[in-house]
Image (tube, rainbow, N blue to C red; front, side):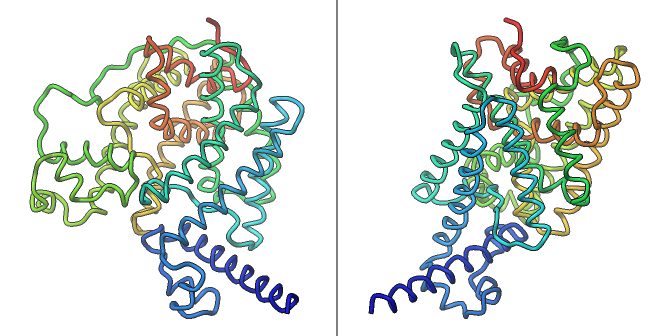
Amino acid sequence: MAVKASAETERFEKKRQDVIDAASVLINELGVKGMTFADVAAEVGLNATSITYYFGRKERLVVAVYEATLDRLEAMAAEAGAQPDPRSRVRHFLHANIELRKRIRRGERGLITVLAEMRTLDEDAQQPLLDHFRRISHCLRDFFGPAKDPMGKALNTARAHALLESVFWWPIWSLRYSTHDFDRIEERWFDILENGIAARPGEWQPQPLGRDWRTDDEGEANTLDQFLRSATAMINQRGYRGASVNRIAKELNVTKGSFYHHHSAKDDLVLSCFERSYDRLAAVQLAGQALEADYWTRLSSTLAELIDLQFFDGMPLLRTTALHAIPSEEREDVVTRSNRLARRFAGMLIDGIADGSIRPVDPLIASQVIMSTLNSAYEARHWAERFDDPAKAVRYYGWVFTAGLFTDPPD
């Protein structure tokens, strides 16, 4: 009887894992909203009712999918953390994530799930996942050794944040490369993380660019601007599903009818938020390009302004985590524009390499590191609040671009 029970348990666990793997693939492709029990059942050869035998509700399945990804990330971080020094830890973690993408390209399923919609879950389901994610972040922070003081701890937190977000953005831009190029990418990517971008180590003297793209907190905003501002902040905080039409309308003290007067559907609002964010990012890039200075000064001025905007402006840029909830045809358009902005950064890098103010780096890879770090800066708002001087918060966060992950900025 014990042998029979053990076999039944093994079959149950295998099928349960198959369900998790299938759901992971569907969430990556369609988002949490698009993943259904019927689609999962079709993938694993069951009927939709049978899925409830393993997971009574859809949210339980989503939680199990996220737990599996967090467990894998934690194992990768722990293995990297066992390496003897900061550089080898970061390199090991980078290598593990690149190898993971190779396995996925070879057809392995359910290895990793986009965590973009984790904050949209009910609070009781969400909190243990966020606590797990925090443990992983702390493990990455420990890659850089013990901090001597609070500012050292703040710097290590920024380093860990930049590294983790860079890895999270990797599945998006990896699609442009063959797996035969992955070893070269690892070398060039680590070089950027290790040594930064500036040709003169530690140089960070950004120039002011203006404020045309800033939010006027005291001026009168039209209704459309109010919707975009409220929706952008709420989607960044709560994710796509958490930023409901009811919540947005309530925050602005308007009716749902007013919302639908400006947007035929919530997806239209998200697309408008992306369009506004990318318009603002492009405006900052063009202002930086127009400076009369070498290209590192132009680039660092652009980066400083965008980081400051993400930290302190009333309307930050929309995080790319919202991408996974919008329909695939619209998503492709948004990714295309994101890549155009990345290529503009690549052009600035190429010009800086030519004038000697930027190190010889792979501009295509460096531009993606820039995009991921800027995108994730919103998540570091609370981190930035600990600094008395906002400019110092911007400089600490931007240090990865300047001199890499392993060099301390001067006091």
